[in-house]
Length: 52
Image (tube, rainbow, N blue to C red; front, side):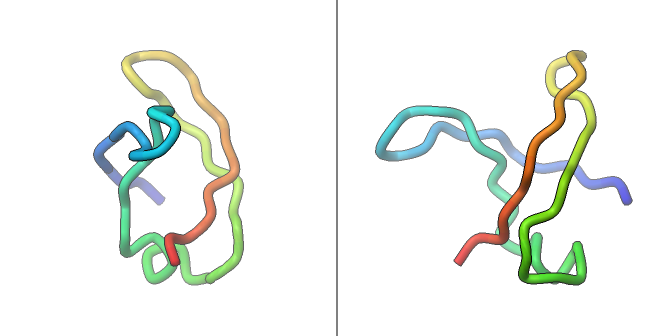
């Protein structure tokens, strides 16, 4: 799967996160999933949880 999403600062901590409200529908699960790709040309791996 491939997707493009906006990276925005968290309103509380200021840490960056991916803003993709429809992720649960896109990934086909309401559970956390492992994701990997590139951010700003750098490899990145993380666990992604659907937004509540």
